[in-house]
Amino acid sequence: MNLLVFTKRVPATQEEELRIVDEGRAVDLSKVPFKVNDWDNYAVEEAVRIVEKTSGTVTAISIGDAESDEVLRRAIAMGAKDGFLIEIDQILHDPGARATVIQNFLKKENVPFDAIFTGVQSEDDQFGAMGGILAAKLGLPFVSMVIGIDAFESDHVIARRELEGGLQERVKVMLPCVISIQTGINEPRYVSIMGVRKASKVERKFFKGKEYEDNLNPGIEVVKWVYPARKGGATMLTGEMDGICKDLIGILKEKGVYQ
Amino acid sequence: MSYTLVVAEVRRGVFEERNLDSIGIAALLQKSIVLLMPDGAYEMKGNLVNIAIKATVQEEIFLNPLNFITILEKVMTSRGKPDVIVFTHSSSGAELASYVAGHFDMPLITDVSGFDKETNVFYKSYYSDKIFGEFRQAGSGPCVVTVRSGSFKEHAVEKGPAETVALEDITLAEGRSFIEYVEEEKGEIDITKAEFLLSVGRGIGNKDEIDDYQELAGLLRATLSGSRPVIDKMWLPKAQQVGTSGKTVKPKVYLAMGISGAFQHIAGMKDSDCIIAVNKDPEAPIFQYAHYGVIGDANKLRDKLKDIVKG
Image (cartoon, rainbow over all chains, first blue to last red; front, side):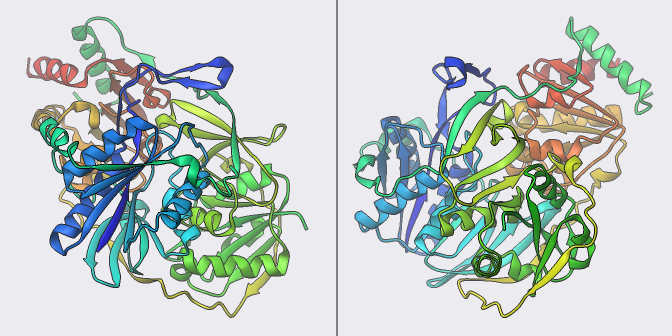
């Protein structure tokens, strides 16, 4: 079983203050640390668990700048056999354009696979669309929001996908297919710095993105970046911690939930 | 005919409330609105649009991306290509939209929460709602969008009875098939009944902190709940998850500690009477929805609160 997993290097913006620069044409990420996309971490773990139980190999693939080699090393440290980096020197905001590059790459390089794993979405652009677009372009069955894989056989997968309100849908999907993995499906294994260092000895293959740009016509364009519209906002409790806590308890008492 | 195609989501026979946002953006686009839906809840909402097309298949078949392609091909053969195809930004809506965009090579913008009629610009969230991108279609032809729940509901209008058209003879795909719906196991704690929820998120740091929050919840007579990352990491049971994929709650007080406020979480708690948010990041989106806010380390505040309550 050959499983491909797409993994992306994204800015860790959770606790960062982001600034729009260049009159709305760019977001300043120069001081923001980067990390592996959370969803992809679960996707790599799931693919590795499957080949550990059955047989075969996992290949991690990333599309991005040279720094993205970092996420491939991490995937290898988690159990992927090797890693391919499709190097591009521009940010492709259009998920359709990214999928086109990948489609061309898989075809031109004749990469064999039984299933492709992606994260449901990436933390930066939140499109949640790459897996579906790629599957359709390749003419393959697709299942997204997968929160459980109950069986992975030679010709099909039984997967549970997450719906809203705690409901799940169990589906049968024939191989080859594309599967988008939701967070919480597993507990990704811990990877030590030593492990990543060791993984860097495993050869990764680097490909020039320009080779795979046939029919690359972005369907959408960014006009500009803007800050979210501010709503009313909260009344902030400020001052020393003691005072803040007393104010907070006062609110709880006023609302009648604490005496 | 120029028209906007709205793809309805029907789940276990219920016309989902979030479809009103899809119809809302269609109303903003000022085009004739055609609603495409599976059998079942068809009769309910036909009056919100100009034309309702009923695909004569059940929702499980309709919501399968492989079958949906066939259904859409039939619609486009009979009515021509729509200008915009609108889906909800839900599990199924996002799944269908991406597959449609890939199959028909149509541009796609997902998680749209705003639209400017003057400039034809769609607003889309980036970086957990900290920045928004204004996007425009680059070429011509049909464009696919998915719509964030709660963003366009106010534009939905009653239009009177719709023309109804049935879509027959749909050949089903073999690559993916529905087996069953699976209900989540009920937990011991029902967070939907709590008047006071103490909810924790990724910002509390690690699993070891949970016991201290449990103790604080006990002291305050609150019920402990969590946001998605906490449940994903198995720090709390799934039944205690607040959000679109967990539970929707409406307590008197929702005290959110270390929760930044992904929109899926906000959707599950925004109707609480009083929301108090504690977060290190002053830019955290949750402060936009909170009534009271504290900028600071949730764990330090927790310890101080415990000391004060214990006396």
